Length: 459
Image (cartoon, rainbow, N blue to C red; front, side):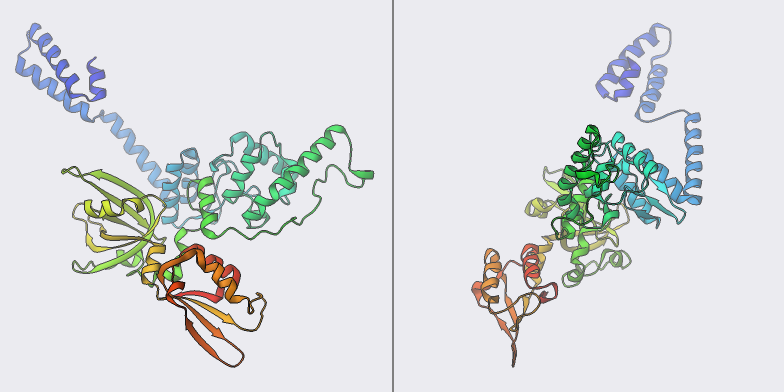
């Protein structure tokens, strides 16, 4: 009962055990002060303690692992990743450690990866297929067996026809596409997702024919050659980077092939003081207000002594990480924005944390990227050439423009048309009614219709 009380670390249980211990000790002729002293030692040990042989074993293992990490970094980290491949939270931390160690992480691939993470000869690591969420071990082993026996997969149809669809079902295939494991057939994951139903239908048809002992019409094509066409039925635009990365995070638990903030790289300089790496290398000015942007990779909230809430967010902009402290009044105002995977622009004071000794920003104002763009942008600039060009822009332009902008009207950002006719060129600032919220969706629609280089935000 005493051991149980020590393990649970419950003060009231330990108090009961003290009474029992003291009573028994006194009955055995032990002085009460000595009994109390002995029990105090046990109570202290119950807090956290273990014997010296345990400490020595830990020290020895620590030395061995540190030596392996220093001298065989890729092999060591591949082994550690493989050991924890079922724990996504640990994988995220370990991948960041690999990046800090300048180890190149190759994305998962059905033609190059194995079940576990593996080191390459060039100080890199190939992502293990076993770490793809939604793809079980039996499915991965079937894929690897097919690859070993019959060579690499040629395309998505070949892949679906060769694997056991009872193990590698549609859910597994979608997870592999989202993770980038089928990028060896081309990097357009949206195309793979659209081609998947057709590939599955062909694979099921081939299986039925094989079971029936039949070939195709007149036996012109062998059942063993399931690839009936290299091209896709419908050409599909690739997913926007934020959508591709979001799908990747669902499948892997992390952003592996990019960073959500990359798509805003050209804009960030217009409303932040500096990137995080530059901030970390500078000396804080206690009186200066700074603005920093990054992805929230970790957020924790806690209650103050006065019963109010405050929070701490870790921002990552791919150049570095910085902690942001959000005290109670600011926390209440912006609490809806404070969650993992949000990209935030934080304005506040830059200082050194007294407790950790690390630089941090104390937030005074928090915005999303779109809110920051709306606040700092001067205009949404659109180029319009009167003559019809390869994008089909003509006198229909204004009608199209009005339809594109209408759902986003009501903001504070003006729209300006950079018009170029046969004999003149002018910048025309549209009226108040045309002011917009310059969000990602508006810019995407305009660029898809007019061309990537015809639409820009000026600051």
